[in-house]
Image (tube, rainbow, N blue to C red; front, side):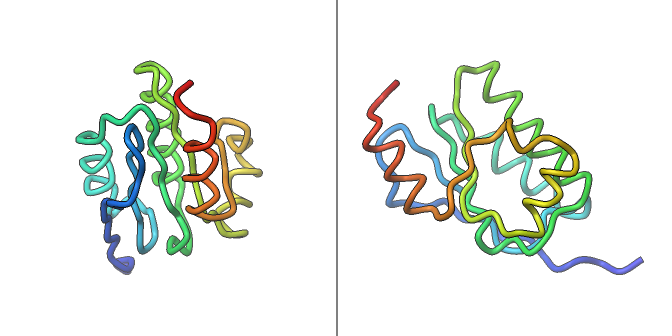
Length: 121
Protein backbone atom coordinates (compact mmCIF):
# COMPACT_ATOMS: atom_id res chain seq x y z
CA UNK A 1 0.00 0.00 0.00
CA UNK A 2 1.32 3.43 -0.91
CA UNK A 3 1.28 6.15 1.66
CA UNK A 4 -0.47 9.21 0.40
CA UNK A 5 0.98 12.68 0.46
CA UNK A 6 0.83 14.33 3.87
CA UNK A 7 -1.99 16.64 4.87
CA UNK A 8 -1.05 20.00 6.34
CA UNK A 9 -3.70 21.99 8.22
CA UNK A 10 -3.24 25.63 9.09
CA UNK A 11 -5.54 28.06 10.88
CA UNK A 12 -6.27 31.15 8.84
CA UNK A 13 -5.79 34.21 11.03
CA UNK A 14 -7.49 36.85 8.87
CA UNK A 15 -11.00 35.59 9.54
CA UNK A 16 -13.64 37.82 11.11
CA UNK A 17 -14.96 37.30 14.63
CA UNK A 18 -17.01 34.10 14.83
CA UNK A 19 -15.33 32.53 11.82
CA UNK A 20 -12.96 29.63 12.05
CA UNK A 21 -11.01 28.87 8.90
CA UNK A 22 -8.86 25.84 8.32
CA UNK A 23 -6.61 25.72 5.26
CA UNK A 24 -6.03 22.15 4.12
CA UNK A 25 -3.07 21.27 1.92
CA UNK A 26 -2.83 17.73 0.61
CA UNK A 27 -5.28 14.87 0.13
CA UNK A 28 -7.95 14.14 2.72
CA UNK A 29 -7.65 10.38 3.09
CA UNK A 30 -7.92 7.63 5.66
CA UNK A 31 -4.19 7.91 6.43
CA UNK A 32 -4.45 11.49 7.66
CA UNK A 33 -7.96 11.66 9.13
CA UNK A 34 -6.82 11.78 12.78
CA UNK A 35 -5.03 15.06 12.04
CA UNK A 36 -8.14 16.49 10.37
CA UNK A 37 -10.50 15.29 13.10
CA UNK A 38 -8.27 16.75 15.83
CA UNK A 39 -8.10 20.11 14.03
CA UNK A 40 -11.90 20.20 13.83
CA UNK A 41 -12.35 19.14 17.44
CA UNK A 42 -10.59 22.24 18.79
CA UNK A 43 -12.53 24.61 16.53
CA UNK A 44 -15.64 26.10 18.15
CA UNK A 45 -16.48 29.07 15.94
CA UNK A 46 -20.14 29.58 14.93
CA UNK A 47 -19.02 29.42 11.31
CA UNK A 48 -16.39 26.93 10.18
CA UNK A 49 -14.89 27.37 6.71
CA UNK A 50 -12.74 24.59 5.31
CA UNK A 51 -10.56 25.81 2.47
CA UNK A 52 -10.00 22.85 0.14
CA UNK A 53 -8.20 24.84 -2.57
CA UNK A 54 -5.05 22.73 -2.14
CA UNK A 55 -6.78 19.38 -1.61
CA UNK A 56 -6.24 17.42 -4.84
CA UNK A 57 -8.53 14.52 -3.88
CA UNK A 58 -10.42 12.86 -1.05
CA UNK A 59 -11.25 9.22 -0.46
CA UNK A 60 -14.39 7.75 1.08
CA UNK A 61 -12.99 8.14 4.60
CA UNK A 62 -12.23 11.81 3.92
CA UNK A 63 -15.75 12.28 2.58
CA UNK A 64 -17.17 10.60 5.68
CA UNK A 65 -15.17 12.90 7.89
CA UNK A 66 -16.48 15.99 6.07
CA UNK A 67 -20.05 14.74 6.46
CA UNK A 68 -19.40 14.06 10.16
CA UNK A 69 -18.08 17.63 10.51
CA UNK A 70 -21.29 18.91 8.91
CA UNK A 71 -23.57 16.80 11.14
CA UNK A 72 -21.64 17.74 14.31
CA UNK A 73 -21.80 21.39 13.31
CA UNK A 74 -25.56 21.21 12.72
CA UNK A 75 -26.12 19.63 16.13
CA UNK A 76 -24.01 22.35 17.78
CA UNK A 77 -25.75 25.15 15.85
CA UNK A 78 -22.69 25.88 13.72
CA UNK A 79 -22.40 26.33 9.99
CA UNK A 80 -19.82 24.45 7.97
CA UNK A 81 -18.84 25.83 4.58
CA UNK A 82 -16.34 24.65 2.00
CA UNK A 83 -14.23 26.83 -0.25
CA UNK A 84 -12.07 26.13 -3.29
CA UNK A 85 -13.43 22.65 -4.00
CA UNK A 86 -11.87 21.35 -7.22
CA UNK A 87 -13.77 19.44 -9.92
CA UNK A 88 -12.42 16.06 -8.84
CA UNK A 89 -13.57 16.50 -5.22
CA UNK A 90 -16.87 18.07 -6.31
CA UNK A 91 -17.52 15.00 -8.50
CA UNK A 92 -17.19 12.79 -5.41
CA UNK A 93 -19.77 15.01 -3.65
CA UNK A 94 -22.14 14.77 -6.62
CA UNK A 95 -21.81 10.99 -7.04
CA UNK A 96 -22.43 10.39 -3.34
CA UNK A 97 -25.22 13.00 -3.23
CA UNK A 98 -23.73 14.93 -0.28
CA UNK A 99 -23.18 18.13 -2.28
CA UNK A 100 -26.47 19.74 -1.04
CA UNK A 101 -25.31 19.42 2.59
CA UNK A 102 -22.55 21.98 2.20
CA UNK A 103 -22.39 25.65 1.43
CA UNK A 104 -19.71 25.60 -1.26
CA UNK A 105 -17.91 28.76 -2.37
CA UNK A 106 -15.54 29.11 -5.35
CA UNK A 107 -12.81 30.69 -3.23
CA UNK A 108 -11.96 31.35 0.42
CA UNK A 109 -12.40 35.07 -0.28
CA UNK A 110 -15.97 34.45 -1.48
CA UNK A 111 -16.78 32.45 1.64
CA UNK A 112 -15.32 35.04 4.01
CA UNK A 113 -17.16 37.84 2.22
CA UNK A 114 -20.48 35.97 2.22
CA UNK A 115 -20.39 35.39 5.97
CA UNK A 116 -19.04 38.83 6.79
CA UNK A 117 -21.65 40.68 4.73
CA UNK A 118 -24.43 38.40 5.99
CA UNK A 119 -23.60 39.43 9.55
CA UNK A 120 -24.41 37.16 12.42
CA UNK A 121 -27.47 35.04 11.66
